[in-house]
Image (cartoon, rainbow over the protein chains, first blue to last red):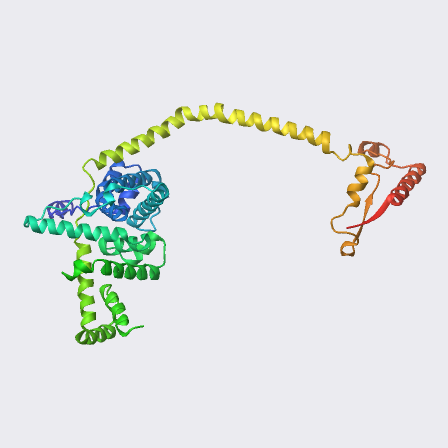
Length: 203
Length: 192
């Protein structure tokens, strides 16, 4: 029997990357490396999400660093009944809202909010003519500016649905609002964007 | 609702794949005839693709280091609190707070004892206080009796005495009855 098993071909081990829930569970058990993996996995999508929310990269990174610190501090509060992504996005969006309120109170006027060309963001390296790259950059910036000009309640759902591609149910959990409200806000946000971006869309 | 508005809603639902077969067919029929809705559909399609193709913002290269630094600062703060903070907090905050509470409590008890104790009030004042009822007379038709004199002469029979000498003399019982009579006579009806 032993020989038989020895002779049998060893099954190929497929190394599956651990799920978010597994990672946070390991982190709850004291594995700090799991936390590092969470940071690595979520830093870009979260910065992207919050950048669309706040329109400022430095603030977005600051909010996301604070989000990871909150996850670190309150890891014991996460229960495996909800998706980890929902939990971390909820923390990030709450912190972003707090940041927006703080801005409103202090009436911070950022120079980067002045014009289209003043913002910094990374464009992925894509092959194409300089004109195309510049055109794409301008187009992207126009869209970002219009998203930023939307009221927060529309902005957050449009970003989560059409950019981050979350399901309505997930958005409902992240923002703690009913699914029906999410749907109506997404549609109203899209219509507002369509009206604002008419010149771009008519080209 | 304008006729096209209904189809606009259908177009939006189409993007979320929430439009049924019947609704889809109806929309297709309408789109063949209505250029305006066709234009709207194309614009929404374009908007959706633009939103999906928006350049991704990546976190800066030193993001990990900044997160670690923030956590390190938090841990240091927490450690400091545990190592020194609790002792310091105790001496700097808790002891003065406790002392202040004790002083306030003593002063409060003393003031109560001195100023507002009912035994120190003059007799006229006690009467005044009792008669002034906020509800006026015959409130709810209930009449209660208040004893004018708190301490009539009474026989004090302690438990020990009772155990040693369990019987009362006839004199004592007469005195007790008299006291009861006295108490009843001093009870005045008060309505409130």
